[in-house]
Image (cartoon, rainbow over all chains, first blue to last red; front, side, top):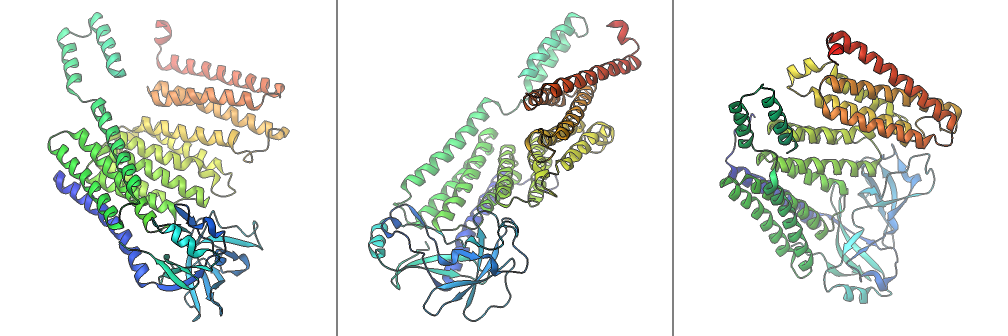
Length: 192
Length: 373
């Protein structure tokens, strides 16, 4: 053994400190993303609002969750690797996907934003699916309903237009920041 | 335990034959008693206790989760983490190493649980296997710094889970496993913990065996057969060199090479339907029979080498594989009686031939053996 043997209490304190640092980094990384990320509002694909906030967590679907495969530019993403979807803001609000690339595009238009995405399973190969669409996830699809907020959000969401406020950083990572109902921010994520 | 029983029997026999004096036998027994064997009951219970403790903390946290603020949850998770490593320090300081290792294991469990719970709290999704990788790395750090075998065992289990998870999602070659595995193998070497080296070998084996289904035309199991044969040859023909350079490992290397070869041959013959022509196809039957004959010949050779080198592990693998091969072949070719009987005839001829050969070789190398028998 090349490493001089540490005293047990020092070694174990280093282990605990390193593991704590990893956990703290997870939280800090997320906090920075939510605090400093560029904000976009994504409409939630209409679902039955009665059950939406009833469970412990809901799965949110978006119009931009299905991306037509003809938008793939350059090499096709393979397997489980992350890829990038460029979204473009629409006149009446909301976004549409305009490009899907295996690597992060260098240049984007003024109304465009790039999100890092993955498929639910693996990316369809050219033979499997030459037309059609691919279902993608941006990491903003599950939402754990905060205790006590379910009934209120459900009441608010009834027959209303539901959207989420999303923070996106320069690398394309996205995080849910809040729930928007009829254009008004009704719930925002607590950081600590 | 089995070893002690066997040794006790042998000691008696040797004493009866006058090979061993009473004093020498007593000295051997005393030496055996003074050596610690394995983890032992206390250690096993301590480790089970640590696992149960981890579950208790997690279910307490989960049950009272909703009523707590995020800050309180995080404080609670971190406090539990530090309590585990604090407990480990306490036990190691009092030479209660087994309890110390159990506490380290508890700390690793809490670390993994905390990753999951924080990810849930902050709606993190990303790539789920990445969380398992992070957990694995945490376990490796704990194993190395706390010099803990049980923690290293946990790390090998976790990295295998991670690799299988990642492969299931990507259906591709998961090369990222190799550097993580190398860190684990280095830890096993640095701790000079032999069970750790076996765990390293087993987790690598789990990674190598399905490789043929992931590369080239996705039915390239012959690559794995070649890898296994190379490893097996290194452990048999290259045994002297290997043992001189690395230490006494050739027996284990041979056994693992055999396991890899046999597993790949099994996949080729019975599991991957499209690796060889179908058995309904007459040519397919011929290919299957040829592969089966090759497999059985290989197993017999492995048994012979196992007996020659007193390699119990390899012998048991070969026996089990021989039985499994015959049974699966019978089931697979059932209904095609002519081919089945043809196969068994060929197998019988080969086995008898090898037995005859083995006897000739044995007689030549031990001219007296025949006379004594």
